[in-house]
Image 1 (cartoon, helix red, strand yellow):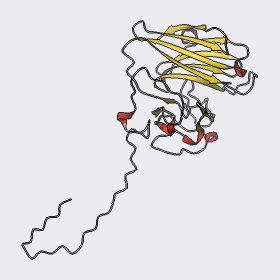
Image 2 (cartoon, rainbow, N blue to C red; image 1 turned 60 degrees about the vertical axis):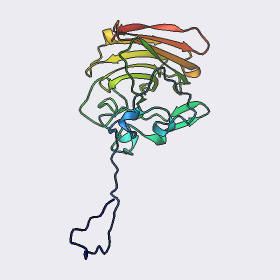
Image 3 (tube, rainbow, N blue to C red; image 1 turned 180 degrees about the vertical axis):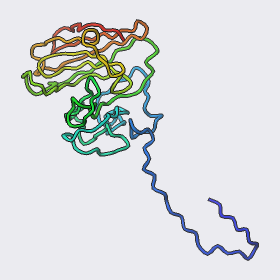
Image 4 (cartoon, helix red, strand yellow; image 1 turned 90 degrees about the vertical axis):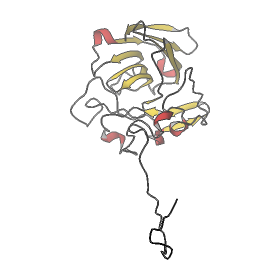
Length: 243
C-alpha cells in the first residue's frame, strides 16, 4: 500500500483507517463453492472416498447441478449461491460416500408448481466433475451399497446411480431404483420419450446387494450403453440408446 501526500513538506497524515471488505461471492456460482478453474479434472479420474480428496465437502466431486427449485419437504437452501449443494447430507467414511437422499428429483418434465418433485426439477446433491467429453469413448462406473431400503414397488422413486450431462434438462442417468429396476434414461431439452430414450430391466435382489453400474459414452458413434452387475454376478448389458 502506498500513501501519497500532495500538500508539500508540511502535510500531515493523522491516521489511516483500513476496513476489510467482506467478500462472500462464490467463484463458480451456481454450481460450486470452488473456483471455476477447479471444476474440471483430467482423465482417468477415480474417487476412493478417503475424505482427503478435496472438492465439495471432501467428497472429491467439484460441482453440484443446480435445481430449478427446492421443494418444501427438503428444507431451506443452505447456500443460495450454490442451491444444489447440501453438505450436511453428505458423509465420507471407510471408503464410502453416504448420501442422505432428499425427496427432490430431476423429473422427466418441467412442471409449473413447486410442491412436489413431480411438479418441478428439484434434485439436490447431484454431484459431479467437469471434463472434456469430446476426446473419444469413455466409461463412468460406480458401485452402490444397497441402493434403496425396501423391495416394495411404491411410488417413492428411491434411486441412485450415475448422472452425466449438462444440466437437469439435458442428461442421461443410469440408476438402481425402488421396485427392483435398473433404468437408463436420457433427457434432451426437457423431453424423454419412453419409446426411444428409456430402458428398464427388473432385477431380483437389487436392494440387498452391492450394485455396480457402468455407462459407456461414445461421442463418435453417438451412443450410450449401460451395464450392471449385482453382487458377484457377471456383468449384464442393459442396452444402448442414441446420444
